[in-house]
Length: 406
Image (cartoon, rainbow, N blue to C red):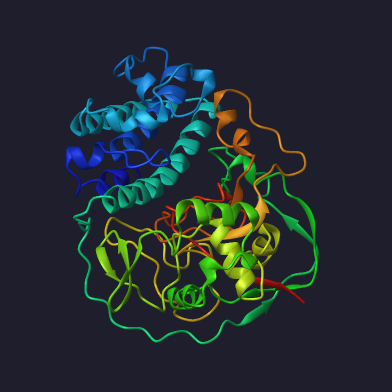
């Protein structure tokens, strides 16, 4: 699994892996090093008595936000780290992997649980690697493709959105046990629990996500210029940033194009729209006479579906949302914005120690997304999985599923 991260950066030069195009994104080699620092710090340093740090100066560089671990290099300055080189960081990964594997048979349960957490942490950063690389390349006027891709075969537009009547009444929400134990077959992050009851009112969910073609109709109808559809903060954001279309879209003589990991191409009208903010998702829902689902409505519906199905990341190569092949898919392609704030569930308690900072301290001002995307490693998500971003952020593969009251 750690090898996938290395495969994802194989097409990159040292310069490609060093740049940082915005504060929200990190250089590719920083992702590689940070996920290695996590294992080195919380497993090897803390549980292997004779372990010596690979480089005593590097924890300052590759700690992300763990206050308990002390001072660290400022996040907006990560792109200035021309040293260490990509090759040195790959050596670091190899050395730490070897040390963890050697120590694993004798590690106590607490340390093995941290290895498990570190592997799921790695998968989160594999997705971030891809989305950050995409943003880095998008600001280069050459708009180079990271991977080549075959010519696309046109797919017929799906029919009108159908509606699935949602579960109503009292439902159980959240991961059972929300266990991070290495011996549990059902890993979950702490923010996915505790499991608790929620009351759902009669509602319906769209049987698919919104397409590029449908979004183009929203634009053509003046959706980005009509304040009636926008939240106040969203309208201020649109006005201040001059937002007129999803991120990476550009109006061409023959229609809209988008930039992706395979370079700039015409949008596929049948594919799910992506790289939209919560503000845009909410405005589209208003324009369509609908709303965004709550995270509890979404989870209750998705629980009956296979989280291993759908278009998710299996290996390095072209990654993008694909047109629906029919049937209500709840996993893959695009993360689906919900109208729910990212807040703790009843009874939530952060775990003890530095890793208690992993999720809990971010439960403010962000919204929940569900379902995973084309860049999410297959097997990483489940119905209870809670992703979260600020309402203006859209460099991830974020999309829209509509809901309505009935």
